[in-house]
Image 1 (cartoon, rainbow, N blue to C red):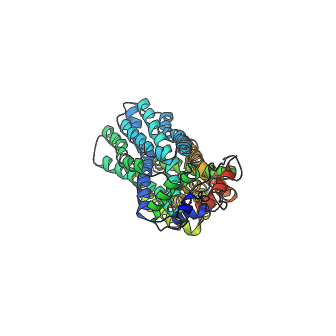
Image 2: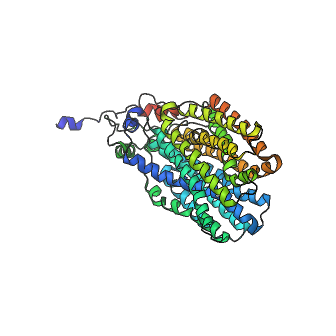
Image 3: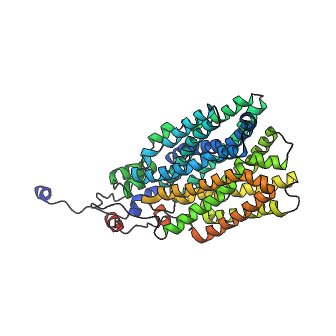
Length: 479
């Protein structure tokens, strides 16, 4: 025994990174997964509510504040352009500082922004407070998908990340529902719009604490921070077990390096940001301006009737589309869902634009418009959220995700800003013709630029497949 005690210690044990992550990759969906999804999903419920309720609010405020078309367009779109800043900023900080330190700050901004928006005393005050809301929304897009993806197992990653995003559907539905209830209750319009905006603070505030308590993701603690002990502890917390051969050291190696400007990540970034941009032009342009679109369809209809029609479209067409996508994401794959969604969008928008009478026949328009909404959700609206959380390496995953989300929000801003002008200049047919053309480009870009990550380990999907040992891999990755 004395001789053994005097021997120098043996070499540090190293095993493939895939073995360290294997319990996480193969774990069944657990309480931790669903708690993460719920915590993340409530943010997306709020994002959707806050972004889309503004269309009804500005319709109310136009006669009260005598808004010009330019002012209406700016209020409808300013949160979207502000979200570009939030997505890029939070995405970068999440890669530098970690996922945990930043998570929860974005919904705190949402909460404050919603309350202040409800207290606005004029155009410029509401304009400024909607910027704060937008930064919070962008921060949510720049953080949530990556955290959920890095916690998820291999088989259900698409379903889990997609479920977070599908909470947007309930936010979409809640906006028209709340607006309809307040308008039907006979409240004064000045009180109604304030309540519409202020209620957005409630779901955001409800998850601030949970987000601040979430653990750092095991992939970040290992690939970036080189903390094996914390990684194994978190893997055990999620999966109930750890790798059978527990490594004791990473041999002083450095984190894996990667750049978004290098192959194959630049092409992937063009694909994720480009398709998100194209999809959001159509989705936000049509959704935020839905009161204007429906007024062009039914010039003599009331704001309440148009709000109820918008809610019906979301309930019957959009909401089911989210959940069909969630349930098929890990079966038929992200790429197939995305290109076929763009294709059907192009066909539906094209039919409205070019079939004679489609923009004057109310039921014909609503059926085609509803089909477009179903395939937006069972298509690129869901998959463009999932893709960037999977196809970039850990060290730059949040930056790639944040830039992709920012690209989407630039498209959303342009759609919300210019659709009111486009309706006046070219009518419903012109709007739908433009949306059809953008959908065709989105389909082609999906086919050319994006891989299929279905069923792969996150490191495979992100093209950072490990070498044999932890230490050699990370040392080889340093430049």
